[in-house]
Amino acid sequence: MWVCSTHMKEVLTRLDLPHIRKAPYKIKCSLCEKSASAKVYYTHQTYKATKNQYMNFQEKLS
Image 1: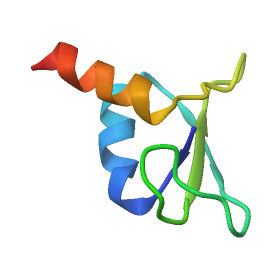
Image 2: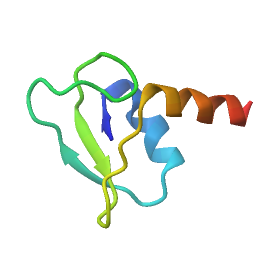
Image 3: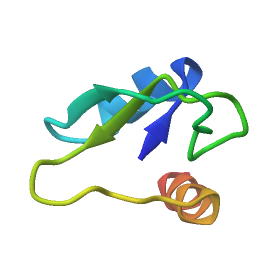
Image 4: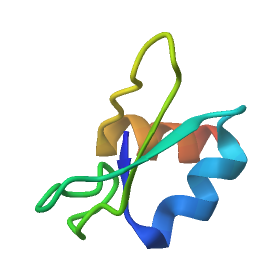
């Protein structure tokens, strides 16, 4: 999952022990259209979330 600095704290609080790597140039955040600052992932498999999956997750929490 690619995340921008705006979503970084939120993603880190929701995922258990993720790994973080600096994002390459011109990669977009998975949750918005801003430039991503990092890739958040697990060692066994990268989680690729879409905006729809994120919105569905947010609705379930409400």
